[in-house]
Length: 90
Image 1: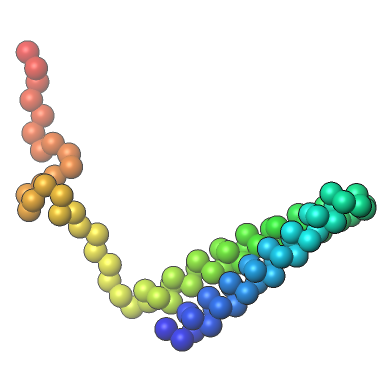
Image 2: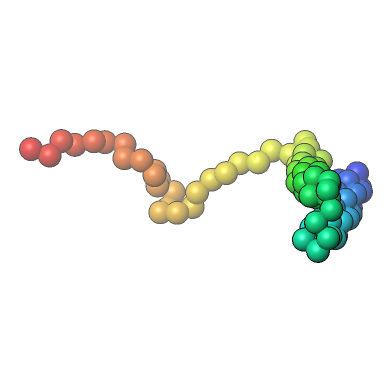
């Protein structure tokens, strides 16, 4: 749990920094139209996406060593989402 928490803090901090820097670079591009600023904005935007992916990949540490079973309680015990018998309409 502690490693996952530390990685999540790191990923969230990276995303916040990228988001703020991206906003600044976008504003600067629209205000002054300097060459290369939009390229820096695009790089920061990709960094924000990668930090978000990094944040969500920490789920590995949350569920490491655990077994997850997905079951459905819809329709009772013997419920099957697909028909077990197919009858022809004649």
